[in-house]
Image: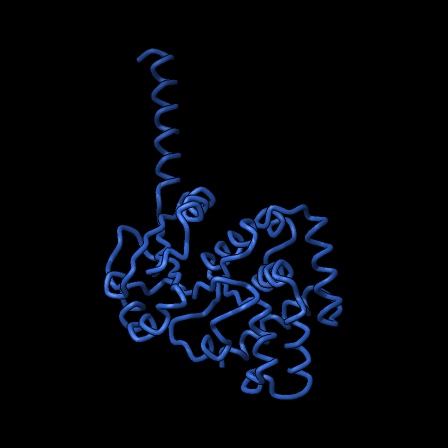
Length: 246
């Protein structure tokens, strides 16, 4: 075999390896009958996460089926949340490693309440659809990595409705919840990543920001929460989310 042929075979082998690496390994299953996730957003997901394939279905029955790859995330249109809840046992049996989030049309006017999420046997996160694309994709990434996301407005809405009583055991807890609700969407996203152990460099890469910008966001987070450092801020985030899950 000539040298040129050896190089060609090597390049073809590398290209084949790269293709295998980029082949879909996980499925994001979107359960919607309203087209709440546009084709352009689906294309953006598959460009951002080349190891993901997006599948859509408009019935719970077809969602309770096997797909070509394991389902890592289920996005449920808010209009189908009740039906998905009713079939949660079967959905979780068919897709045991999947996390589920409800799709909300807006970030500020939420149909889902915190009590809905707390009472759900399926839903663990809320995904607003009117965020900037980079922020929205960062939340999807967080969900794919096993994290959970609740819009700050959802916690504030719960406080205004008095829904924080079940998990805010005293005035201090209520104050902490109110402080958390003051965080912007970006700040809440970054704090969620910090709580999962991500360092500034990785957070910056995930969010498409500079490390300096991440540090500025962390400074604002620490100030708003009234804590001394990122460790305390992350502990506050985990504490409130664990309390909300009880």
